[in-house]
Length: 570
Image 1: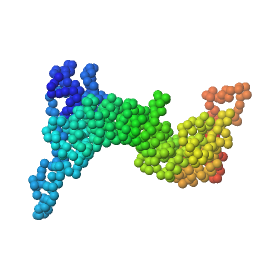
Image 2: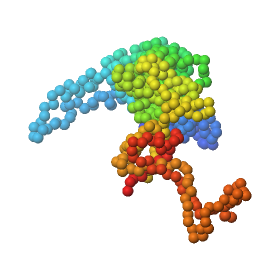
Image 3: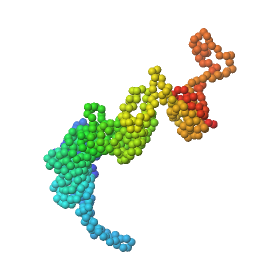
């Protein structure tokens, strides 16, 4: 094995960072090779398997996160913490060395420039340091390392994401030199935590906000244990983009952890977060996780309850039906704040009758399903908002119940809307005129369904369906159609297509007298000429014009459905 390169080594190459996972020969290739895993998981050509042989494991599940490289590469130069700090925050040019500034022909007096430069060099008044992606590497024996504490004595937030840290020990040696540090960001540092077992318990006890996104640590065997061992005081944790599909570790999380961001992981159900359910987390953020349901349905013996969660962010997931929201109150009994935008459910909403609804309608229906919700998508839910949402929802349930034909169908509607009973108790039970089916299969003539007719209108520009009472006047019907097509009602002609045919006589030069009937045959076809066609008559579809007036539509239409052609009067 090369004495220069070692497993776990972090190296920068042409602006990209990588981790050495293998050092040695590769079958069919001469010399020594480095098997590396790129921080950019799409940068490589394989995942540690080459020509069917597995050489090393990658933390990422990506099939293109790894490559083989020759050890001799034009590696980028790394920086120490102080070098990165001075390059970004400390001016190397004093005010006296700068060119004079002129306005017209007069030289400007540079009051305070030297004082400002000295303050900047001492980082006075600076509390947040961001040194992300600066090829930073820290060692305890770096030059002038002891000056970090004096220079950064007021720093409370440090971001060193996307750098070249290799172990948690290195991170600790740096952070302990910042006495007031409370927030630490280590995103995209593929650190090893094997050495954390030998670190002092509670060594990062001053850290309150921690970000470990895109570090690709295993939740159960690596990340959760170091939280307990090293970060007992953490209150907010961001652990996004780690490719986790489940968190079932039952270890106790830090008791003070109140905010947990697990966005952009691979969860598909909330049951995948079983290891978080019993924690004290109050704000749970799960954006862009492809979540579809509360549970997978496989485990029916364990009820999933996030008892402490008051704020839930499930934006941009894959929720497609209302079952998810119906189950939220039991799963999150303390829920007060919810964010739901970007889910497919809100882009294809329809009533039971197929009428399209807007996303705003969907948000109203979300409010109506969650009694204790105080804000939705950052908007406060007022008493008026809740009244409108719940009465609207109750009306939709009533309409759906009215469309049912049997008690079993009605029971199914009530099961799909578990808040129906509570809404009826609050606002009174709505009038429900159910479509009922008699013993002989006919619709009850006293039901609402028997008093409605479903008309399909066909015009040269469009086809659409309206459901109207049979008692509606033709004038009113013309008004509905005129509004739909944008034409004055009395300029329209409505033609009822009955679907029945009438014979139409066709006189010919060979007419031989009145129609005749053959009494010797019971088959009417035997009485037709040899070609089977009676040339003296043909058939035409029966059409009836629905004349404008006060007559009811039901005097023209007998059944429950009709087809009407819409024409412009000449």
